[in-house]
Length: 221
Length: 234
Picture 1: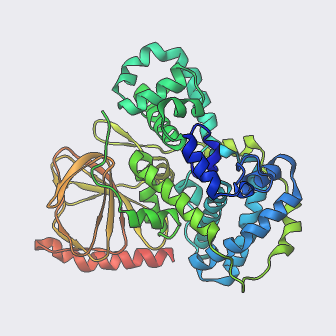
Picture 2: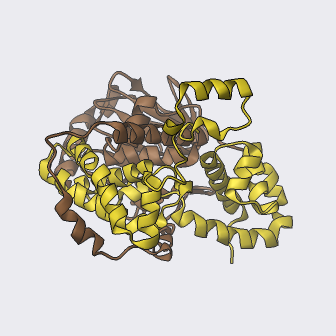
């Protein structure tokens, strides 16, 4: 991840590290996002954990005009774009407790949330039927997943012997992920590390694998 | 057994999708494909974070109005608790379509679309279709081709997106299986057939034109119905 500063990797060959140091004055090395209290991520976490209004102010200053710009680009309507700023920043405030670093960068989180609100606002403005909303089209990674996976874990452990046959029908990549989580009882992060795949890939494989198993097992009583 | 798609949405389409630029009908078809296709899911999430990065990096417009008077009203609102949000993503009620000998589990977004109720209509050639209304720009429908069925040759006036959900079908350009995602434009004449039967989700942005035989007589009728259907929704 290039968001991290080069000095994080302190196992780099000495010559390379020295070369980097020569080029980059020490005070310009970016601190880790996690520890910088002024990073978007830290601010967002502060808003979520302690309803920190000054952190929210900072985020508002950083993002409100960007949200307006996205609104203008997608709707070409100043009033709608204005309302989008209100709606999106309100959602940032309300959903901040759900954010954690697993969800990716704060800018990515705010971007998708703004896109989704904008999509729904446009639909409403054009009086489209409300059968489908943005959250159906771009399901939130995490919120529902946590519950879903925990439920599955309970029943899978009990029936593991019977479902072994189904399990062996899964593609290898999905089998490996299901094994890490359900058999070895690892966390998503640990499993991703063990398999050397990105966390997002792990989660999608897990969802596909568990979905397939669930389909094969059939309705549970 | 795994369903690995041979036909995927283009990079342009995924890019527009990740930026929320597409009509709801097309977005629904793409979302359903992504749920089934790991490769495109990864591509889309990469495109999304690239778009986010680009968006966050762009310099603010100096002429943009100031919104800071909104802050006090926002921070007066209650925040979401974890549980509240977790319960929201329940699976919608209709998540399977029953076919002749088995049932097909639908991707989440299609299950949601189908939850308005599906009314199947039988057409000539062993085709059944059930339309769902998701927006007023496109015509979305589930299409079920019974084994051995054949759609009369037709040409699209606009474009048609097809996502195969179960079984397979063929036309002049290829053989398509579950998870495959195709876009056909007005330049493609086509005549789909299905030996084993096939369930698809199709999104049309303007009516079909049949080009051969008696089916041609249906053209004005289709055009009329399409316009009427769109007018009724607007």
